[in-house]
Amino acid sequence: MLASAFLPAVDMTKAGKTDAISTSATSTVAQAIPGDQFLPIVSVEAYVREYFKDAPILAEIARCESTFRQFDSKGNVIRGKVNSGDIGIMQINKYYHEESAEKLGYDIYSIDGNLGFAKWLYGKYGDAPWVHSSKCWSKYKEIAKI
Image 1 (cartoon, rainbow, N blue to C red):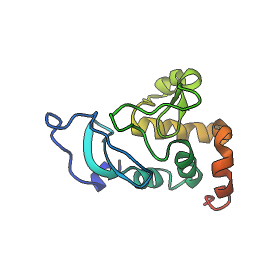
Image 2 (cartoon, one colour):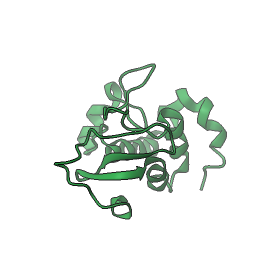
Image 3 (cartoon, helix red, strand yellow):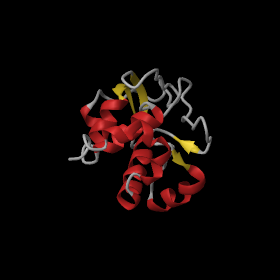
Image 4 (cartoon, one colour):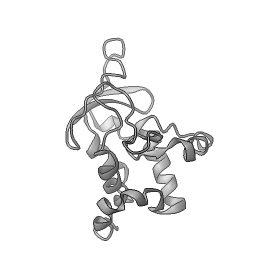
C-alpha cells in the first residue's frame, strides 16, 4: 500500500523485524510493513494519518491509544497498560476481537492488520470501541470530520 512511498526495503538477513525503535509519536522507526517488507526510518504517525485519511478521527484515536506505536523499543508489539489484552497502535482487544479479525484476514499484531481491523471496527461500530480513551480524542471529533 503506502510502503512504496517510503525508503527501500532492507535486507532481512541483516535487520530483523524486532529492530523496531520508537520513542514518541513523531519519532522515526524501523518496522515491518505488509508483505514482510522492512522499512527503515518510517514515520509511523505519517503512515497512520495517510492510512486513515478517509476517517481522520481514527488517527486521533491512535495518537491517544498508543502515541502511534505498534512496537516497543525491543520490537515487541505494545500492549495496553490497563488491559494487557489490548494490542498495537489501535489497542485492539484480543479477547473480544482477535477471532473476528483473523476470520476477516487481519493480523492485529502487524501494523496494517491492526489499522485495517480498526477501520473495519469503525465502519461497523463507529468510535464506540475506543470509548474509554474518548476523553483524549473526543475534542478532535469535529475537526477530524471530512
